[in-house]
Length: 380
Ligand SMILES: C[S@@+](CC[C@H](N)C(=O)[O-])C[C@H]1O[C@@H](n2cnc3c(N)ncnc32)[C@H](O)[C@@H]1O
Image 1 (cartoon, rainbow, N blue to C red):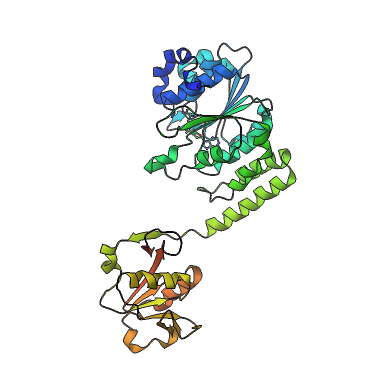
Image 2 (image 1 turned 60 degrees about the horizontal axis):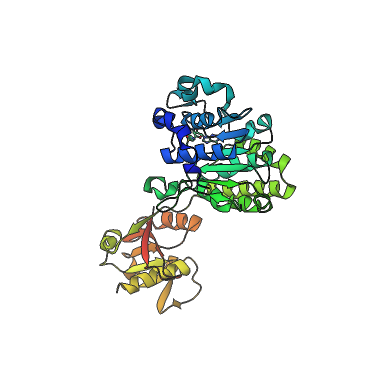
C-alpha cells in the first residue's frame, strides 16, 4: 500500500495553510494522511506536537470518522514563543473537539490517563537517542498486537550533515521488528515510515532494550527516568526493567567519562604538531604506542625510543625502551609524544610540562584493523 497516494484530495485543501507550521514535508504529510484514511484508527496518539501542523493533518483526516480521537503529547508547553499546538486552536477550531492535548512532560507521565487500545502512534520527538525508543517502549503496552500501527518521522534525518547525531528514530526503526514496514518511495531512503505492531514486535522487544546500550546523545533528567521506569516496571517482565536500570548505570558511567576529543592531523600539518628536527620519544609502549611508532616509520620519520614509568623490557620492535625517570640528556629536547589514555595521560601531561622540547598527546588510528589508511589525531 502506498499510503502517500491514498486519498490525497482530503489533505490538499489545507496543505498550504499548515506548510509553515509542521516540520514534515508535504509528501510526509500525505503519507500520514493516507495511513489514517486507509487504517481508519479510532484512537490516535501523537507524541511530539511542535506548532501543531501535524496535529491538524491528523485531525483533518479523522474529522469524518465517528468516535475517532487524537491525543497529543508534548514535553514543552510552548515553542518559540507560541503555545505548543497553537495551529489547531488558531486555524482549525472546528477540528478541536476531537483533540486532547497533554503538555509539559514526556509520554510516560500521561500514558496511564490516555489508556489502552491505541490504534495508531505518530512518533516525532527529540530525535536524540534514546528518546524515541523510550517513548515507544512506554506506549507499546497500550497498543493492540496485530492491528495497531506506529508512524515514525525523521528516520533518515542523520543523512543531513548538520543532523548527524539525530539517530534516535533510525535506531528505533532498525531495531523494531515487524512483518509490515512501509515507507514512501524515495530516491535513496525515505524519512518517514510506518510499521504494524505484530507478535514479533513484542517477541523481539529485547532488541529495543539492547539498543539502550548504544551511547545516549543526551543525559535524561532523573525524574523522567523515574517516570519511564514506572511504566516499564508495570508493563514489562522484571528482566526488562532490570536491563533498563542497568543501561541507565552504563550511560551514567559513560557521561562521567566523556569520549576523547580528537582532531585530525594531516601530513601537511605534521610539522605544526611536532618539531621534525628534534628526536621523537613515544610515552607508552602498548598497542597505541606501537601504532604511533609504525605511523612515523611509515613516513620515514625516525623514532628514538619508547618511554615508560616502569619499563617492562629493554627494547621493543628494535627501539630502546627508556624509563621515564632516566631520560638521557641527549633526548631531553625531544618531541615527547604521549600515547596513553585516561588518568595516566593526565598525570604524565602534568609531570612532563616544560620538561621536554615539546609535549603532545597523539593517537594513530586505522592501522591495526581493516585496510583504512592510517590517520593521526591530536588529543584535545
Ligand atoms: C520534531 S518536533 C514535532 C514536529 C511535529 N510532529 C510536526 O509535524 O510539526 C518535536 C517536538 O517534540 C517535542 N519533544 C521533544 N522531546 C519530547 C519527549 N521526550 N516527549 C514528548 N515530546 C517531546 C518537542 O517539544 C517538539 O515540539
